[in-house]
Length: 494
Image 1 (cartoon, rainbow, N blue to C red):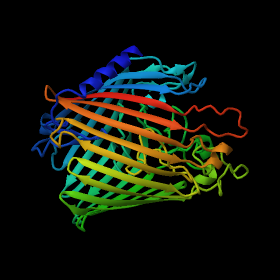
Image 2: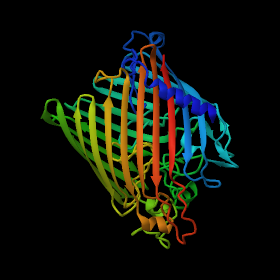
Image 3: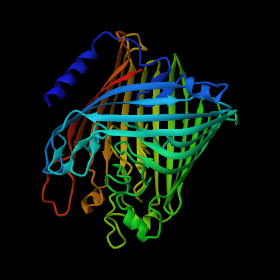
Image 4: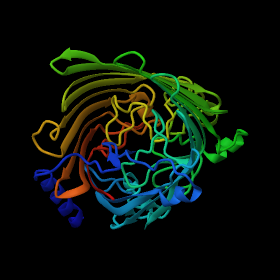
């Protein structure tokens, strides 16, 4: 714990030192969400041998630290603790011969602390990828070939098949820890239509961030299948099998992005898991010039989830404990028909931006999205929060300032948000919802230094002030859900 606190104090001090530009290497850019953008990749070659001799290796070393300070500890549930891991990745991309190429990506991490357990209960799940979550709460190193795909390029069409990263509204690498979320899939992208990008994908399996093996994209089973925090606990392998369905269903998805109208960006996503449900997401953002480099961008997102059998298997609640005979606050407990809308306004000028967002989930079913893309992302979601359960209302204010772009503090970029999340008390009292009303203040500070090229330091802090979780009968009114969380990450690219 002392090492953790000392390291974080040193990191905070570094943020006040003289620094350089934002982290950009000669071949990559590291975005604020830790997504890697390759700006220089191997080109066309003349022989099969040159595919490999003219390929490129992309390396990365990472240190990731976490510390949780709970307002009230709870036996076998919450406890002040920390986690620290050292890891990294090696990505190899071949050259392209007659349009064909390949990518391999190995990711790993080794735990440096061992304070994550209370008996056999692992309470460091939020620090996943710093260590591997084992059944007995022990810490183990992770090593996984998370990416491994063949690629074919022809004109404005790109086809990939194998283990790969997919970024969309509901599918994401979410590489904010140590190992990204990836998928086994076949994806084709085309840009022949002017100002339009189209994608069609077929996914067979997923590998969550703290897993070493690929597993079901939907079936929920801790440490074995999809045990994401946003997973549907009622869609277990046993319940799926009892309904005569396959626990390893495939997903088909289609995404479209259009910018043919000046200043207007339109997005449409469709996801289908046959025999379970499908989801449609529509989004529009329009940038309005206000003069003197100021702009105002209103945005709106609409999500519709359509049941195709998942409700009868697992129920309407992500908690998995809702049935026809025990509705627990849900109008139709055996249907996952659901919807959500979100809106935002973004005011921007140069290095500064200010966003106000609001989201409302209909009082139907919870939204199922265990693929690390977030239904409320970019509108009202704050760090480590889940606010797409039925009848949840959230508003958020977010400010960003690029001190480097403003010429004030070279290399410093800061973002802060404040969110108010209002959950359904009736569902909370009935035991079908494990979240209570809360406010969250969260800040990210990213810093680079001229003396340390290709290196980035990122400090994250969040304080959550939650109401006590309501239960019937009320036997304990102690607040066990309020806490402070600290994260410190170092990235070095070579």
